[in-house]
Image 1 (cartoon, rainbow, N blue to C red):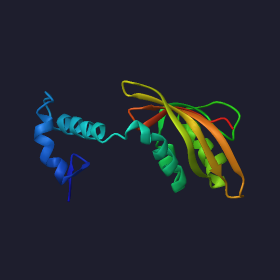
Image 2: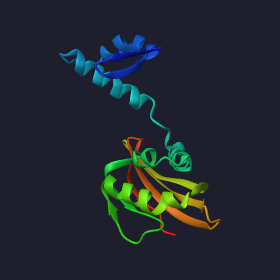
Image 3: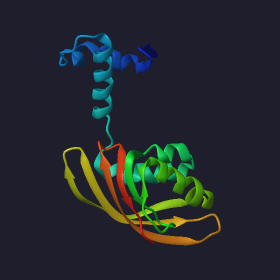
Image 4: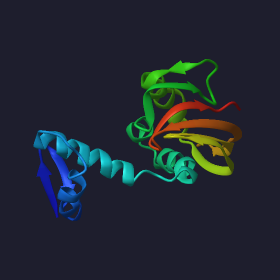
Length: 160
């Protein structure tokens, strides 16, 4: 069962923890407590760093452009596989995935991954992935990804 609290959909099990978690926050309004509570829930459910590349791969393989672009931070820097140039901001990620990459109907397979470093809420990953395109072409690319808050890509470089 879900409850709608100030426009936010909250699971009933989570709602039971609401008063306990909110007791940590010394805010004056209920709205602020609800927003802080939801932020705390998102933080607790953050994807472990060793699953971030899998999250990106699974989202890409799902074929939904909006879901792929939603993984990118508003101010990301992107050096894509099939495009020469540097794309900035979420708008650049939307252009590349929508115009250049997703029409090729890629399927991604992770080959290798290494965690370069983790500092605070920033994680840097590197590895290789293989793409199989709709025309049967296979492409291996190396990548680096920088993730903020274990949910949004700040940096993505993927030279062929």
